[in-house]
Image (cartoon, rainbow, N blue to C red):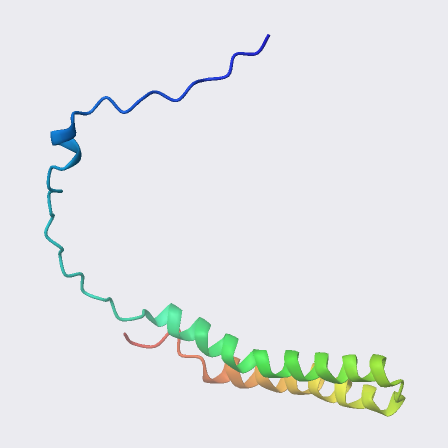
Length: 99
């Protein structure tokens, strides 16, 4: 036979229920500026998102409409624009520069 635990009654006195809650002081926390790695990753993500979204939009349009010429847009924006974005990001990267 399984025993079901029974919730225990609140054993605090009525005075403890109405006691004021102790307030704690809040401390200000300085927001750190983003590091070089974070800004570089954000730059790569922002620039590479566009080719991925465009090629997927063209591919979905090809599948949904049946118009085969739309696959050309997927090929041009997918591999074509993506390779150009990779080359631009690699050449303009400054990860080895002075901080």
